[in-house]
Amino acid sequence: MLPSAQWWLVEPQKTVLLALAFLLPAVFFPRASERLFLRLESLSSRVAARKYLAVILLFLLVIGLRVALLDKLPVPNPGIHDEFSYLLMADTFAHGRVANPPHPLWRSFETFHVFWQPAYASKYPPAQGIVLALGQLLGHPWIGVLLSAAAMAAAIVWMLQAWMPARWAFLAGMLAAAKLCVASYWMNSYWGGAVAAIGGAMVLGAFGRLRRKPSLAVGAVLGLGVAILLNSRPYETLFFCAPVSIAFLVWIFKQAKQPAARRASIRLILLPASAILLLTACSMLYYNARTTGNPFELPYAYAARLYSHAATFVWQTPEPAPHYNNVDLAAFYDQFESKQYDRTWSTVQSVFEEKLRRSTVVFLWPACWLLLPGLLFIYRDARLRLFLYSLLAILLAYALVVWPGPHYLAPATAVIFALLVQAARHLRTMRVYRFPLGAALSRALIFALVLDVWSLAAQRIGDPQGWGGWGLVDRADLQEKLESTPGKHLVLVRYGEGHSVHEEWVYNAADIDSSKVVWARDLPGDVNARLLDYYRDRAVWLVSPDSDRVSLLRPALSGSQPKLRPVQSSPR
Image (cartoon, rainbow, N blue to C red; front, top):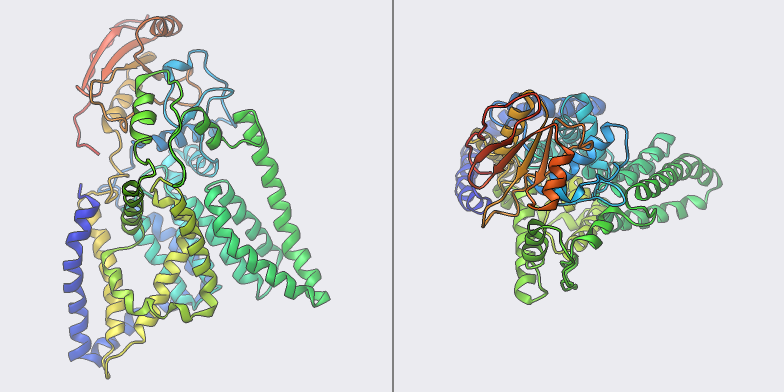
């Protein structure tokens, strides 16, 4: 797998060559090259002009393209802690429950980003879990990822149709689809940002439409978009929605001056949006009460209070470590997490550099440097200033937290690609004497993205950062083998010295006791004794991930099973 830093060092050389390949025809054969490209672009323009068709077509195109690439980029295995936590949530929802009762032997199953009292539940907001649960009901949680990614690209087109010409809105959706829906962890994992990106696109798309012609549907979309944001990225939503809220209040104030417009805005926008948000607030209070026992405490904050003592915001310092029930949790929270940031200037600089690097890899590609001349003119676009304010607001939110996940910026995904396309529009108008050099560079930009994505897919790279694709293949192979082995199984996981805290094997489904395969920590003494007695009817296996060894400790009551070994695989 190609490290992201190395990828960004290599690609600029290719970008220069590609730019020259488009610039030379524009210089030596300007009329012929323009005629050729305009013919190709006219087809896209005709499709984009049929707005609903463009939205549906892009949704289907993303699904078709990603399915066609399954031989190169297969259905991903989970590998990041967060992914397993979201999958637990999905399994809980798919079984018709909001949370699960705590297991009497929960210490054996304790793991990251999951809490056990007063309920067995994930710490994350529920929107991503709902999408994965839909996928699970359709056959596999990744189907939910696929559908949400395709919906994100379609939502970006729908949003921007209210703000710019249809063909440019369609181009923005195409760029987002290529960048985020093929070789990105947003598509090739279970913890990406597509759901929050849909919410952000719905909010701005609804606001762009209500200014022209308020309608009941637009009011409902506005309320639903905010609801999705609050249940996917609640912290970032407060910042992202602040400029939109101010613009909305200004619009309401102007409508209030005209009685007919005031009544229409209240009936068509405020009432449906408020009704949806009231229902959302009640649902969130209920969800909090069922998971944390307190309707006013979010699961994320509750889990942080139980386990984490590292700084969340850049002005904080790590707190004293709480007691952990096993060395693996202590190694992650007390040694890895808390030492990532200590409020020194060196760690502040490191955090900001990491955020810049990761966000650049996720949202941009090396050829984006070609857009610099066009970017200089974006400030002149008064209609898109709300986009700039929303982006700046969420960047401020991102700057204040310690962790560098680029999906924290997900609510502003549509804004990012809208500004890229707007810069391309400015770039396209630039001519040197009679030569259409700006148009040539804008085409090179698009072609460069296609080549980048094709290159990653051809190398079977699900994400340049290594966050998506492979996952824990050995664990997945062992799970599959045990699922096909007669009887029920208990797997004790014993880590060796120097085991990476990022490769956690102990995760279980929502209903642990009904699962064919149960994963537990090897905790010698009374904890293991109670566990083995509780699961006396199961075959007991001991797995050592660091040595790739699996041994049968106790056969099931129905008889002995053959020894198993995980299949060797490349590291993720």
